[in-house]
Image (cartoon, rainbow, N blue to C red; front, side, top):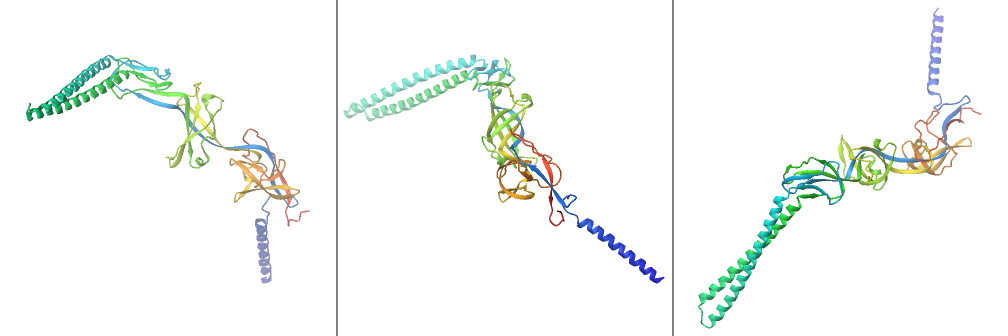
Length: 397
């Protein structure tokens, strides 16, 4: 009976060992790659095809006038007529007219004051000349004993007084000239003219309004060109340089695509939601008036664009600035050094080292290249395939 129990224990132990060994084999002794029926690993490949890749930085923007100026009143006065919102003017055209009656009177008064100051100056000059002549005569008579020393001193003081009077008269003339210039400028300011060819963006003027000096009259803008400003984060701004190509699209333009160049890049970042944002602007010709201030548009900045063999980005490995791809040739996987070009994170261009039609190994498993698409003017389509290759040590023949 005791012997029978011992055999049962031994059988149970053997069973446990066999089951444990089976689990270990299934867990740790399976091949890492998918294999075929004859021990052949399967790899994902793609046929090299020509195409192009463009790398762009994109962002939303708002249309702004090329030049905007707030026109303010240089005088205090009553409006006789004023430009309305949307009115267009050429440089030098009359925008606003003030009542000029008081200003005209002020010019006439200043002109009379100047005439009086000139007369006073001329009289002072004559008096000085007479005083100097009298002093010279007194000095001659004093030497002959005909006049006293006090008389000579009196004539000398008269010359000094006349000199001061002449200087005062000269200052009065200068003040009168300045007053006349100011009055004339005030009169000229009753007619406000367009500083450049443009359009009135806003105006709240009405005839009869009393306007104080320095008050805003209208907002005026040059819309023959417009500026679009986009926000670019710190991760992409290093790729953007002046004069790079820019394309602009807008719902207001339908399917029309406009082209321009990068005009300027802000030198310092603006922190928005803890993210460093830089502003990039571009200018567009807008003489046809299609774009209006406030419209939204999308800016796309071309960073780089190359044509060549297009592959999924993950098919190219880079080590210390050198790029490599694996190709399938004569039943073997070989490594080739290549020169890589534009890479948009999905696709990459191989400029040198690879020919069209070669079979390139794509890292990873599966039967397709999800997300692989070509951009640019010469898009192509590359089919993928799964190729079984012998795996050493599997006993394949």
